[in-house]
Image 1: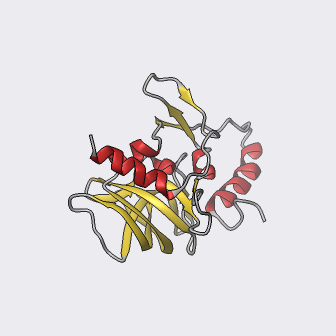
Image 2 (image 1 turned 90 degrees about the vertical axis):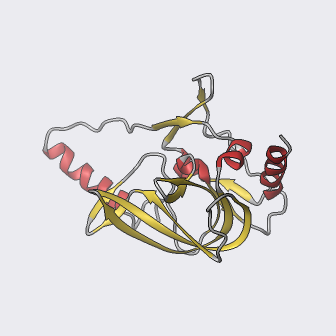
Image 3 (image 1 turned 180 degrees about the vertical axis):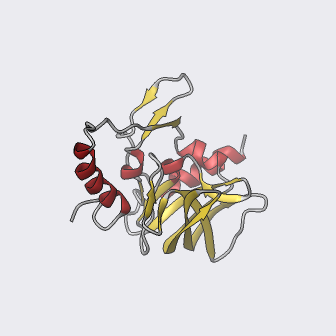
Amino acid sequence: MTPFSGSFCGLALRVGLLVAPALGLAPSTASATTVSHLDVPALARDAELIVAGRVEAVAPYRDRGRIYTRVQLRVGVTLKARGSAPTAEVVAFSVHGGELDGVGQFVAGQARFEVGEQVLVFLTDLDRRPTLLGLAQGKWAYDPARKGAELTPDVEGLAGLELVGRDGRPVPTDGRTPVGIEAVRDALRAGASR
């Protein structure tokens, strides 16, 4: 089973490999989405809602010609809820991209979610829609059994990002290592004491 089996990306790749030569097109290099690098303290500071839990549902929808995916998360742990951010048992948010009615839209650097996976997400309010902060930087796999290293970055989503630091220089995406949930709590405490 490949990482893309059963997904619209796999289908698009297979169709593209068949159609491109027929049209006389050569394959091109995939491009990345360039965004500011957000480390755990920056994610914790800028997020309006930080929750961990299990993905219950993913549902694509169309809005103004674009495809989005609505993610429904059963919350197990709430680390931060600021302002009007909900403190509910279930949190719903949207990410760019998805597949709807046989049409797939892929956004480089955006996280994808699967029903049943355990995640910790850093959410922000974008146009009154809760969404991931920093694209795939805002999604971490969450395994409460791995004490001290419960959180693992979304390596697949990060592969589509070109991260840049405050100085404008590239930041490697492969340098992200698992961290404990206490790192997020420490960042929240440090931010509150400023």
